[in-house]
Length: 31
Image (cartoon, rainbow, N blue to C red; front, side, top):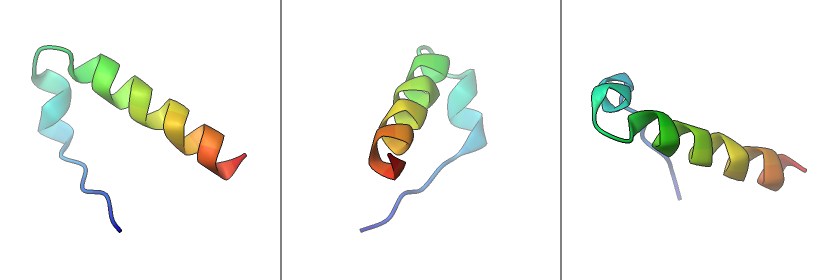
């Protein structure tokens, strides 16, 4: 299992929400 992150995705519509949701999941997983 892996994750790819493309910085240019921030420039897309909803990109900031996408990154924010991802970081929330990482924080929950890291606990």
